[in-house]
Image (tube, rainbow, N blue to C red; front, side):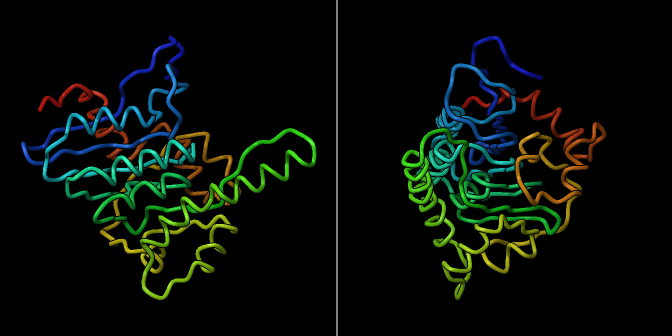
Length: 242
């Protein structure tokens, strides 16, 4: 459902579990702060800020991610806000943590990923118009911007994994299932779940999106999570009052 009413909707989903913990769901594209959203599932830094204000003081924050990524700067802002939060944080990659959504879970103290879920890392890219001098500057800027994500990745790699290895993966647009991700990063593989991929046209922008994800993201029929849980999430937007 598109939101073209000119007003941003507060759709960051937070579910209050107890007086000590809460769940936060990032189930959409990562976009910059604006007064409106193309899609109501989009996640802005302001959404996360508002959610974190609601859960301030809790001991545990569970972060559930199923996102194709999006804006580099919005993603880094979300990562830094989550990183600063004093709660003990557990991140779960439910379906996809791609592009900037592969950076965000590393704000957590522990990261869990089912064997059939995916992390995808790649170099930042942009559209560009201009003369040769303009385009060279844009390329240089992208190299600098890329260091932000690289720093996060390198803080969370397995012992012995080099920056050269991660850079090669970034150059290749590397898709890693849970088991593969655990070979390079400090993540814990958990039991395979029947999660639906984030249904987003954003996946079509990548060069190597697994066909299985493209097929699942286009289905109207969904697995248990996206059919039952997604409905529940949307009905619980105003649950939290701490």
